[in-house]
Amino acid sequence: MKPDLFEAPDYYQLDDLLTEEHKLVRSATREWVKRDISPIIEEYAQKAEFPKEAIKGLAEIGAFGPYIPAAYGGAGLDQISYGLIMQEIERGDSGIRSTASVQSSLVMYPIFTYGTEEQRKKFLPKLASGEFMGCFGLTEPDHGSNPSGMVTNFKEQGDHYLLNGAKLWISNSPFADVAVVWAKNEEGRIHGLIVERGMEGFSTPETHNKWSLRASATGELIFDNVKVPKENLLPGKNGLGAPLGCLDSARYGIAWGAIGAAMDCYDTALRYAKERIQFGKPIAGFQLQQKKLAEMITEITKAQLLAFRLGQLKMEGKATTAHISMAKRNNVEMAIKIAREARQILGGMGITGEYSIMRHMMNLESVITYEGTHDIHLLITGADITGIPAFK
Image 1 (cartoon, one colour):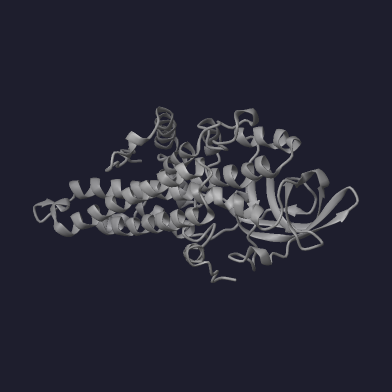
Image 2: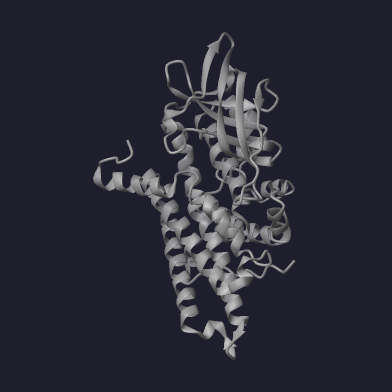
């Protein structure tokens, strides 16, 4: 395995805007990725397996619920710190970042925000420590961009609910101990339920044959007359706005994470271009390669500024769904374009597992689709600036 020589670009000296705590959090995450993820990730991606040993490390660096208060096992960090953690983890691999994103924003966030005190005390500390792993059930086989059309449902049965339905494309589901599941009650209103591993009728078959996020575990959630205790209902919010609020938090993390993938591709391409000799000089000395590299660092810098300002808005309580959609869409598109250009700079070597670029490129094909497709995020911005929704 080649040593991880990654050096993060900071063309506009954005480090000057970060606090010492931000830098310490980022440094701890970066060191963990270099030590524990980079040496193993290509092997796990090649064999399409999630490295479960990463769970302990993710918990130790505070990647599970970084912004959840310490009273519930979280690190009590701010949103910039959360973003930087996601950036550094995705620099290692999008699938590992997905694991942390789901645990933090799609499982711990709704339990903390919409749950009861009893639910918080029961689940959050174990999720923060990695003793419990979680997943988020919203997408269905026939309802992706239109989650309001979901057919998963639950009915009251005395002291419990009876849950039926299925969810698809669920990160972490094959090994999840708990699932935050969104389903309709008998009146057709969407609610969140905490479904626990071992409940009769609850199964989580794994999805195989993926060409993307190969080092991430993806699966289904199947509910066949699952008895869910009434105390497992999330009472704090219902309606479609409840799961969408969770997705806002996760998409915010993606906007930062994608920068990490782009940085890794850029750093790899820059180093290679300086070392690869053709026609008697490094290919970095040719105009077309400099054009590619200059455009890469420009787009990364723009994405960094976008994510940082979004983080400020989020901490001020001013970040809207439309703000987050713009950053998620822009930054993932930026990252996937950089991955493709970086692959070109490496030529044939760019498709091998000796370098990270092709793995990032394949991973980003999922990231550009999940938690709101590229087109849907564009239409969210369109609806926000015109006042006319185009997808209803």
